[in-house]
Image (cartoon, rainbow, N blue to C red; front, side):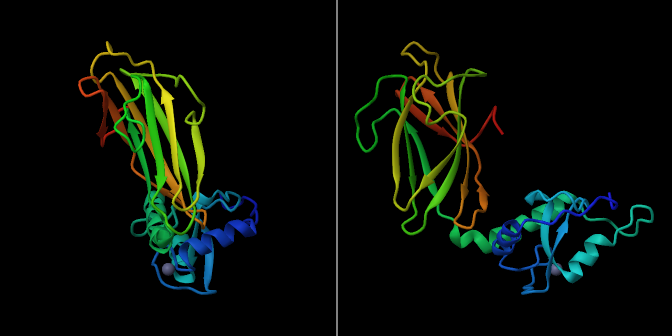
Length: 230
Ligand SMILES: [Zn+2]
């Protein structure tokens, strides 16, 4: 691993990482100003994936480098531990740029008590931001029973989409699923995975959730679990 050739980290990636931590060490959390370096977590200086990089102070850089697998002393830091600590520091310094987004699935036309046809589903996405834009990475996966199914209309919701949401933006949309009045209760579910990308380009992972179709009320229940997705 050590013999691998070092490949310089692109300047814009460096700038991004330093902005995300506001030049604080992502291991001990102290403010570093110019006394900061970027460590390759897996020890491979050619692996410049952002997930493999961590900005650290000189002391922590030494600490992370010094473990020798041939003569182990103490307990080495786990990659997961290092990355989780880094994410906590990034989160601390970018949280003020995070704006929430609301995603609602319903059988009703938005802002009304008018129901759509069975199988025609409202999907309303709105940013709660009043000031700065956000990007939403959105994936909606519909299931019939245990089987993943296709949308019947529109491609706005297909696959993994990156949405630009300016302040106060609301997107009223709808998609189709093969639901009829005779469909078995709770047979249809949509699982939603999403993250919000702030103005500094940092992605904040949100927890996935679901909506479940209920024939009895002709509408969707919010279900805080996911069964099939990630
Ligand atoms: Zn440190």
